[in-house]
Length: 210
Image (cartoon, rainbow, N blue to C red; front, side, top):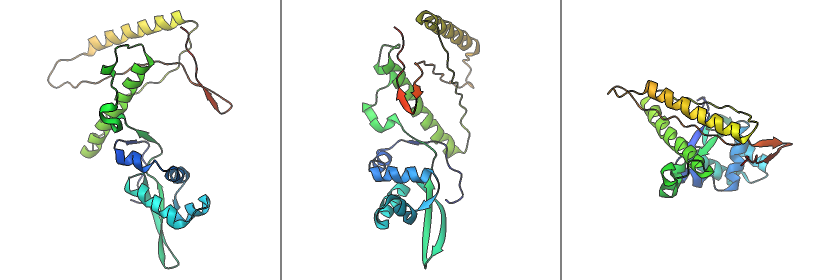
C-alpha cells in the first residue's frame, strides 16, 4: 500500500519470485525504481520503450511482490499509478534450490571454503524462515551480528587467533548453557575469510597465505 515504509531486505524464497526477475527488462525496471518512485509511462520514457510493454512487466513485478504502490494521480481522465521497489535490497534464499541446495551436513571439511558458504546459506535460510514467522505473529525477532576485520602478520598468527577464539567461545557456551525447560537454543555462526579488496571500482579477490 502507498505510504508504507520500504523493507530493508526481502528474501526471495520461491521459484515464482526468482522467475519474475529472469527477464533483463524487469531488473532494469527494478533498478530504476530503487532510485525513486515512477510510473510505467515515466519508465517507458527513460528506457525508450513502448508504455504497454513496460506496463506488462511492471504488473508482473507487482504481482510477485517486488513493487508496491507509491501513489496515484489523475492525468487526462486516467489514473496514473506510480510504484517503488518494495525493498532496498533482495537476496535469493537457498530454499529456492530445494533438495539440490547443499547444507553443512553434506560436507566434512570444516576448513574448506565450501563449508563456510553452505553454513552462510543455512543462516540465510533459517533466519528468513524465523523472520517470516515473527512477522506473522507480530513479534520482533531477536538476532545478533558481529562483523570485524583483523590484520594478521603471518599465517601462524591467524591460526593462533582462531584457536584462541574457539577456546573463548567454548568457555562462554559452557558458562551460559542451560537445560531448563524454559530455555531456548540459539545458534552462533563464526566464520572467517580474506577481505575482498576494491581498487578503482574493480573487485579483485584477496588470496590467503597457505
